[in-house]
Length: 164
Image (cartoon, rainbow, N blue to C red; front, side, top):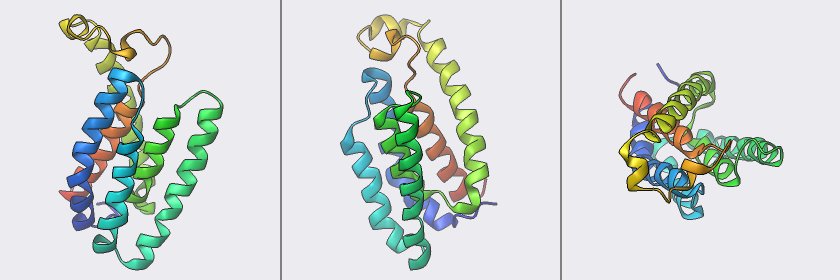
């Protein structure tokens, strides 16, 4: 069971799916996450959270955004995370219940491993020849973290919504 109510997770999942697909695609193709995607995810929480959560929980969850933004900035300063990744991570953080942080970290870890393997395998397929201009194919040690971040957020909300 998840601490996030299923109704709230379902409401958040509806906009999170297309936004996450957008983020994953843009990050793999350009190694950048559009600010519009980050703002859309933030707006989804700002509007839907008012309906989905008790007011005190809704307001406290903004602290998740602040904490993750600070962590993201620090990771960006050390070169471990891109600025777009940090902003996307922060924008999605209010959708994660405080009681689900351990589960979310496990999901993110799994999605990072799956994302790296998937990205490396896709480079070996005809997809690379079809889209040779995709930035992440030749980015060296850099990895499009938007892919696993989007996967983890969608997985978490899906499991919380449908009783995973």
